[in-house]
Amino acid sequence: MQLETFEDVNASITKNSGRPFHLLLGNGFSMAFDPSIFSYNALYDFVASLNDDLLSKVLGVVQTKNFEQMMAQLSTFSSLATVFGADQTIVDKANATTKKLKQSLIDAIKALHPEHVFMIPDDRCQVCASFLAQFLSTGGHVFTSNYDLLLYWVLMRAHIASSGDGFGRDREDDESDPTSEAQYSELRWGRNRDSQRIFYLHGALPLFDTGIEIVKEEYGGSQDYLLEMIGRRINAGQYPVFVTAGTGEEKLNQIMHNRYLTNCYETLSAIEGSLVTFGFNFGPYDEHIIEAINVAAKHGHKSPRKLWSVYIGVYNKMDVPRVEGIAGKLKCKVHVFDAVCSFIDFWTKGIG
Image (cartoon, rainbow, N blue to C red; front, side, top):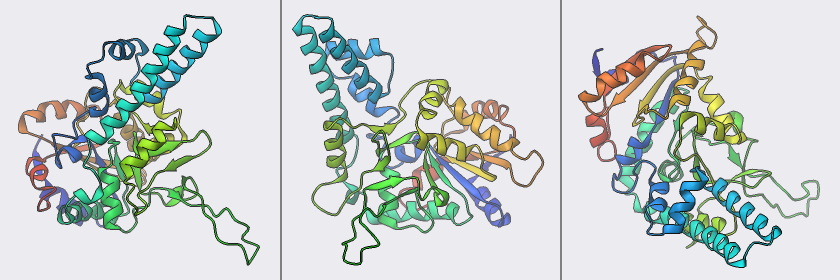
């Protein structure tokens, strides 16, 4: 398989001006910004590495990396222990572990991110924004499997056209009353999903499921930075919507139990045109992404309204044989391009 360059990808975008080109970002996108803090599965690994024997044992027993599910299991255990008259020390231990796990998650989020959005230099933010806009301008979507704040921060700073994420505010006062002062809800997902162009396939730290609505926390311009507000929600018993480590089947199961994540996945499964992957590894636990791509490729069979090709960026030439194996699983034409220089230059001087 011929190893192309990102310039070849750019040439294809230019040549096929009427075709949407979608972008799939993986962990390499964030690693290119700062590999020391945006490592794969960093949140779970941070919590799991804490020097706490009881917490480590609990993580081994619950056998899930879904933090919300962990909290729910601990809460259920605590309630059942009380009902069955278990020793109070056991109930206290369960409650203390829940509190410690909650605080550990908050600590991990803060430790593994820059303090706030303005820690990203403006020139680096603009370089990234130009890269994203290149795909959005073709009518394509941007998908990401990352749940960190980096993409959200760039979109917030850069004000890129056609970069809606499906969230918006609903007016909650009596609009028929001319004397009523306008009152709006927090950012809710749903009403604007028809114009949604940004999709967090595995959720994101600012997204919360209230049980009724999917809402988005936002930086409001005060001294309360986004990380602090996320921490407050977690302390209040709300947990971010994000899919952590697990097999592809486990990830898909979690996705299908959340209507926001389901919509993102189904949108990926219905894209047409071409898909460019940047920093996405297609690892052993990404079978659900491969399946979504194949569904899109088979959509409409020979109709123009289908996914025709995928461009996969590789980190080094030694990775090409592995990607060739992945290409054999995909039901559309596959191009492989050298992303090494792209990763080095992406956040500094741009690529392409």
